[in-house]
Image 1 (cartoon, rainbow, N blue to C red):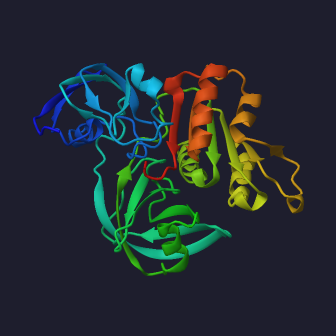
Image 2: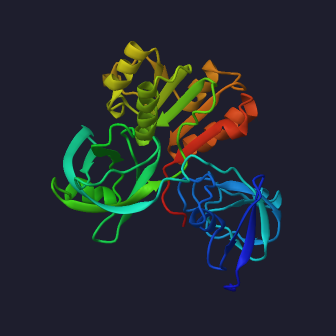
Length: 339
């Protein structure tokens, strides 16, 4: 691929910038301060999908579910992976709320490791006394370990409660999970890069809010809700949290408190409840519970975070069956790197 600079024009803003042949459309935009909506940055989630109006791109390495052959045939690309082969004009969603927040690399100390469930750890990180991380509720950071591991984790605390950063990690058995559950100790020093991502609450709307979390996707949803409560946002809020078994609802009492004290509707949903769970609540797939309660979402905003299959199913079915405008579906999918 040539290193000749290519011009990128973003529509509808008409922002323009140049990228080298080795730089993605998203990387170039972020370098120039233009924030295209994105989440995973590894071709796995589809949050940065947009339309190629003019020119040609190398589509890069991506999940075939995040960008299908039909998507390509219809002119779509993932801007976190697409590298211009010519000058290009692309249609995308730009986010203005994060453009003034610098991405930084900072040291931090593990202040506390707290088991929230048998396979869920909350990591409390303290920054140096002279530092604070400016971020928007819902964003994430990348932990950078001495062994070269890099892991994206959503911030579970809201921006106003920034004395320590809180992260929720489920043990899926991967290298980073093994490190945290088997090796990491309190007082250890880590480094991280952040804040990252464009998953945050759009406060310029008065539409009712539906939050959908699966598993530890609860972390950024928690941050958004605590931010909304702190700011006194009066929009109607409904929260759905989908898990497998009762133990997975590791902060159920907190969500029950939101419902009791702030008028937020909270709906936990279990997909594989055990007999010992004595579960009498909603059952099945969490996105289907949302659809049962909101068959018409045309006047709503949805914020969804969790497993890719949950997020993709919600995006597809909410927009196709429940009249949700696609621009009102905001998501962050927890994905491994695309193979």
